[in-house]
Length: 442
Image (cartoon, rainbow, N blue to C red; front, side, top):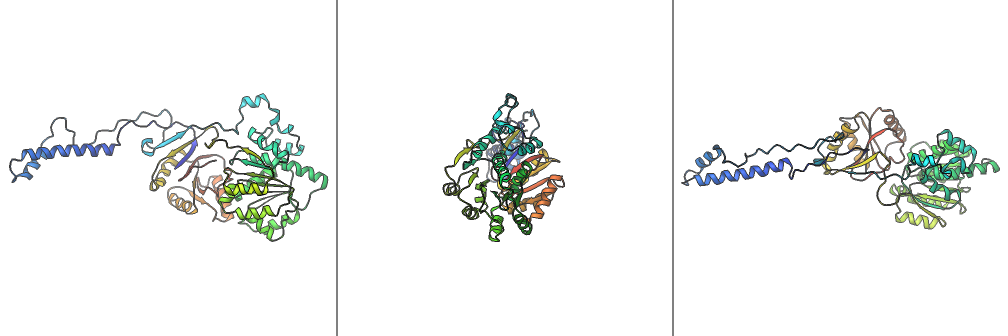
């Protein structure tokens, strides 16, 4: 089990050599052996072994022999300096890691120094984008965003190794939005889309489309399964500038002849490794084959499996490689600590209850599982004691939206979700995040 929550110090480990039950069993064995030896020595005749044994058991033990079946009182643990976990860390096996500085964080000193290269107004982009971003409170870019922005504005193909939440959407989106606005000023708004962004999940696609819609006056469309396709077809017939969607629904629209990719100038594969995980690899290749040769391609992935390398070799031209992850150690935002609890499989569900009660009582909690069956079973088991709902790929889009709306509004406080289905979720004020059987990232 992996638990992610705000920083706090764990209770120091006990220095007892053995757990209390083990010491009790050892002391009981020593005492019984001593009593049996006394019984055998007291028996002078084989005819009276039972009476001798009974007499030995009833007589008080000699000095220095510990009382049978009565373990000594456990030594008290040192009092915690801060709020402790719900149980002894020796039993649960807590291990904490000190969070590494997050490269996406800009210090106050750095902001005061004034790096002109990070100011949005000095990027030379359309004033309409600058105004939209300023209305959202965005006047400067993080250094991690600038690393993506510069080659993207130069029109180069790019391979970015990045995690969710690094701000890369705005970094690759600003050059795309700026060039589409300049194109529309000269040629007018076209009927066919000029940019397409592929994402592995509906939530991530909607989040990316929302970022584009709020940052520039462009016609955008988000396409994904689980909802009627007719409305998406009508919007495409009217004309859009940017299409964001999952590969499966994009393929459906291509087969129906309502999505024309002949004028695409920009293609972005966001979290490409997750597309492989959910089985979109063939669909992605079909879409890439239908794109014009003269385009700018950007691919982002946290890992680089063989399929990703195949895509880059086949569809990207002399790409610039940008590593936003660095070493293999997971980087966490400031104020977040990662704790692991060593537990047997059958004991993980029983640990979650006390953890939620202690660290997220009354607040929001998300529990990640690897499979849909695990999500359903855990939500059913925890639903007996808590207000809990499940979220995974087999749930209809309407139910997904109702579930997420209820979780955001506080109608229930525990969400059990598969890691793939929950990618791209934007839920504020989550007090506790827990993962079963694997390490998680946010």
